[in-house]
Amino acid sequence: MELGLIGLGRMGANMAIRLLQGGHRVVVYNRTFDKAQELADKHGAVAAQTIEALVGSLSAPRIIWLMLPAGQPTDETIELVSPLLEQGDILIDGANNNFKVSIEHGNTLEAKGIEFLDAGVSGGIWGLQVGYCTMVGGKETTFKHVEPIFKTLAPPDGYLHCGPYGAGHYVKMVHNGIEYGMMQAYAEGFEIMQQSRYDLDLHKISHLWNQGSVVRSWLLELAERAFEEDHDLSELRGYVQDSGEGRWTVQEAIDLDVPAPIITLALQTRFRSRQDDSFGAKVLAALRNQFGGHAVKKSGE
Image (cartoon, rainbow, N blue to C red; front, side, top):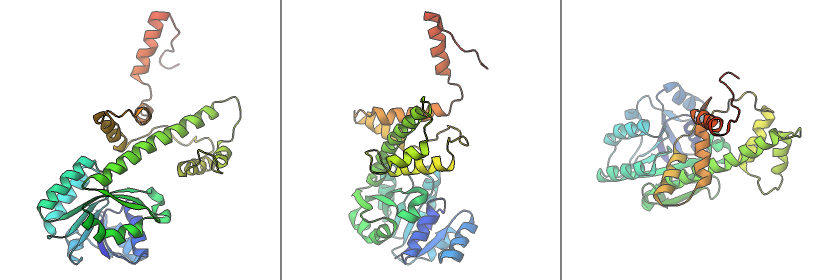
């Protein structure tokens, strides 16, 4: 097949390479043209200097895949691209967008005669090597038309049509919420061992647990790799960002009256990681001192 890919960041560029290796014709555009030209020179992509040139170099029905940051960058690009498309063309949003926004995009584009798919893509920087697990929302007929692309990107059985508009991003949202909880459990376990009375080799332990234990996983393999590169993680600061999906998962749990304490606490712990000195912790220390005379540490101690 042929498609246009807009956005050549950490995932977008590798996705283009995997598609090219699978025999597809891929026209690429990036705000920084050098990235597009590099893919053309090294991997055989067609580099477009403008979005208009990208659309014009594709035959109908055109397939345009956006691999941009969620929110405003994706929204603005959809507004820019959609007037250039014709009835029957297909627009795929591969960002980690909020599923409610994807429903709106689908309905808006459908009214213009443009097909829409929301694709939740998991695989990160390893996707080129192991494939991209892809969760897709939209019309099934549109999904079937594009299926060869998903099949090339994904590992065996690694893609699924999840339902109508928004379903792909919904499933990816919950996937990332679960990921928050799993990562937090590993983080707490390794911190307990790091603080223990024993001089434990966390790299060797993570390797050990990956050999048939109940808690083995790809995340644990990545932990093993991290400990191998930096034995006590001394080069890292414990500042953990979140990109939105965990928040949306927690909000959805609240809206559905579903208890989700692990995912919620994992999200809150990420918030705490960004505070050098929590004001809430200061309030707790002050209250313990006030009602019980418990010792407190002064600022700078």
